Length: 290
Image (cartoon, rainbow, N blue to C red):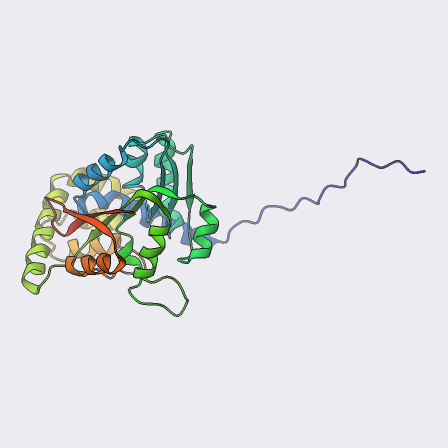
């Protein structure tokens, strides 16, 4: 007769691997770039009005709404959305872990992390997204300047292209729910695009110059060279373009004219409404009812 032993040998303890200097440097560089984006984004895109419109949509009488967001980044739309609906069940996706880390810090600061799940990076395919969501369907699906990073055509990797991804997003929304798409659009012709580009350039420089001491102070610990270069405003004609490149997505973007977006939505059979930003006409909010 034997007595079963309750003792189970413990697994040997191994010291936690220390990231190499190269890995630490890369991670620090990514976080620093995300912090620079977070600082510059409000000056690059005057989208406060669109954020207000999105929050108005979120105030719809839905009990404990479910929100999915693709491209939540550093939380530009996420933070006000969850401040508007602190009762929401939220799942945010982004390609950048560094940007999501900043969003997480912001949400933690306002007490909105409870009920929120953040995923980064993620693959642009149905299986991986469906596995992360675990059957969650949304009352509201947010896409803040994310679709412009989704390829227009099928890629070799087999990921979803833009039209297929939009059709998939519609399947993630409950009947009666809404997709809230914020996109930057090109002008319909060269003259219109030139006017918009000039207006964006002037407005960006004006917003940045009006708040220059604060911006330079914020950049001192992130990028001292960029902070010093900002002291040349408004005399450096290449600086604003360089700042926009610094704040852009790593994989680049494919921006479409407004008419192309409308054709895509009509091809998919979407019932949609378009609102343009009053201060920055190349920014649009598309509200799609599912």
